[in-house]
Length: 92
Image (cartoon, rainbow, N blue to C red; front, side, top):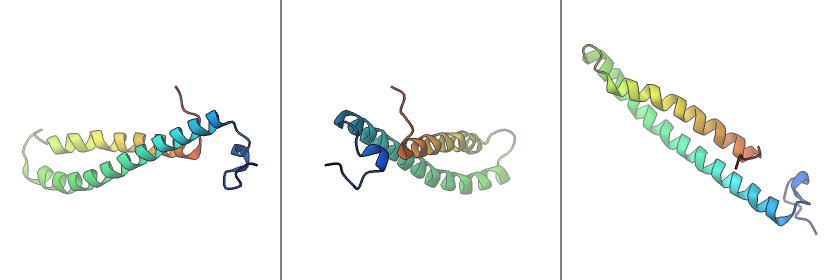
């Protein structure tokens, strides 16, 4: 008997496919957790960057550069994590 708690398309899958789907969702959840932690770090960096941009002279703004790097990383981890959690096939 199939598990009624699973989505309809996943109720009649073999055990190998269910296991791969669980691993993919776990990886997606891990990516979302990483993105969330980086968001917290980015907020702290944003506050620090405001101070640095006001008082540093010239091009010596390393926190601003780090912040510019962290934003796309957050977007990538968040998007990939969301897609993997949703059920998009994983490339192996």
